[in-house]
View (tube, rainbow, N blue to C red):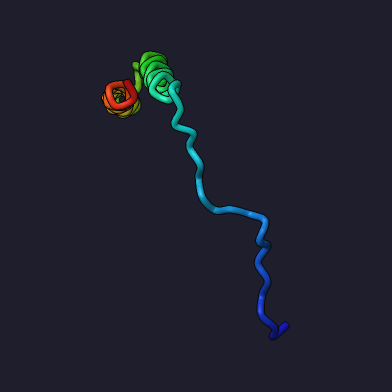
Length: 70
C-alpha cells in the first residue's frame, strides 16, 4: 500500500460551543455541580481543593459572561 492515504471529508475536528443567552447559566450549573462534587469528596483533601478551585473559576467565568451578555 504505497499510495496516498485518504481522509474522510465529512468529519470536522472543531468544537462548536453555542454561546446563547443561557450560556452563563450553563457555566453556573457546572460550577454548582463542581461544588456538589467537592462536598461529596470532602474527605479527600486534594480532590476537595481541586474541585473547589475549579468551581470558583467557573463562577468567575459565569459572572464575566453574565455581565458581557447583558
